[in-house]
Image 1 (cartoon, rainbow, N blue to C red):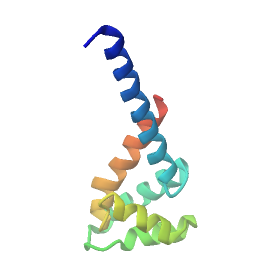
Image 2 (tube, helix red, strand yellow; image 1 turned 90 degrees about the vertical axis):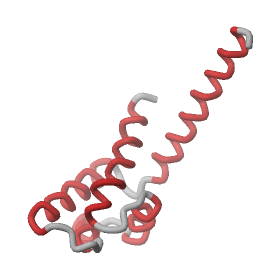
Image 3 (cartoon, rainbow, N blue to C red; image 1 turned 90 degrees about the horizontal axis):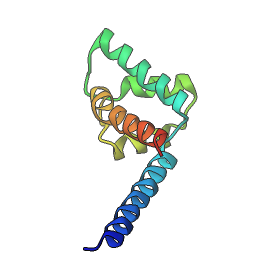
Image 4 (cartoon, helix red, strand yellow; image 1 turned 180 degrees about the horizontal axis):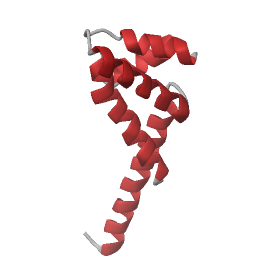
Length: 105
């Protein structure tokens, strides 16, 4: 592969990554500040009471913050947040990767 071909391929890959990151960011169910508050609230409840393998704390936080419940729960489903501890382990990581990736675009 010639040097211009490699450069074009690299640029195309960078563009695809930007597009994927923009799509992931657009799919977030709330603002960064709201998601920070949401995840921190779920974590605090988990630390105090442990996980009962439901999304009880997540639903409490959704209502407390005033988020769209079906939108947030759908996003959590898409990001393997099926109970409060999985929300911290999986969905929080998905949000952080999206947030951190977006900041370097």
